[in-house]
Length: 398
Ligand code: C2E
Ligand code: CA
Ligand code: CA
Image (cartoon, rainbow, N blue to C red; front, side, top):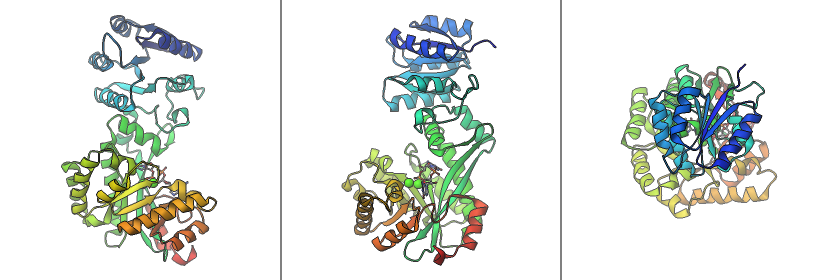
């Protein structure tokens, strides 16, 4: 078998040589250049399988190099390397994917040798295929390409599961949170944190969200249109909530006969706070249409109280890290109590997610939390199982 080829363009010879050493140790043959002109010659005559590309170079900027590679219909797996902030890297990754380039991942400098090896597919002992696992123990999904996600959408590999939410006071079912799943034909289940962040990076989160809406709203309308239940859906921090997005939700609800106030959109604390002025106008517009808004993962971001009060949220969702540890950590219980009393004083509903035992559910009841969600009540289930679960459910049994 001929070794796979990695071509490196970087203005820093130290970085270039480090990448070469790591790649050679993984069995690749490598070529390193500092000159864009030579780089394009080698792309043409050496036909690399992988390209490692610095985005910020004195003679030429990396985005221009990407555009030129696209013009030449380059099929190599591209690894973008840089020391710039993640927003810029994300944007570059998105534009490259839109140009039809194949992005193996992003390597932000300084990087760990193991991260590069994984991007080169050298971890599963299967030579140099790409592996859809999470790089470096983080959940960034660096090894997922835009093409993987597009193919997954085309081949209908995404589906939704539903996790019940119950009222703490009497354990009555209040609704479900829809959670997206991906079963890749070769790699099996890919964790949502990994594929969501990959989709965000490639600018593919909107089609994925639309698909999730289609699946989950459809299921909800078929089974629970006339029930008092509500359906919660997750909205990415990257989704721009403009007029068209608002219209998309209301149009779907109308055509399926779901009242808009049956839908709760969960946004993470940080996403809503990133641009509070814009968030304020678009979130208010949605809230006026009846759609509920929930702050997800509360306690993990950096929101100020003032911003919480200004934005038109109707639900606070205590992050599961506090709830999972509530039975053994008095600090976690204090945080939960504080969030619940904040919710009460702001007239917002509170939901605790990550309820894993009876003791925690009892603590939440006593503290006045409104809703609970977690493995102790039910795991996320595929649509048919969730419907069956509702029929078999006995509130007194918990
Ligand atoms: P999230 O919105 O905070 O979702 C709740 C996560 O907590 C789910 O993980 C759920 O399975 C898990 N969970 C629920 N109860 C328990 C419990 O008792 N114990 C423990 N240990 N975990 C519990 P999942 O499904 O892996 O989703 C992870 C994240 O992926 C979600 O966090 C959400 O941020 C994102 N995600 C999932 N589906 C979508 C989607 O359709 N769109 C977007 N934008 N993000 C999604
Ligand atoms: Ca959520
Ligand atoms: Ca959450």
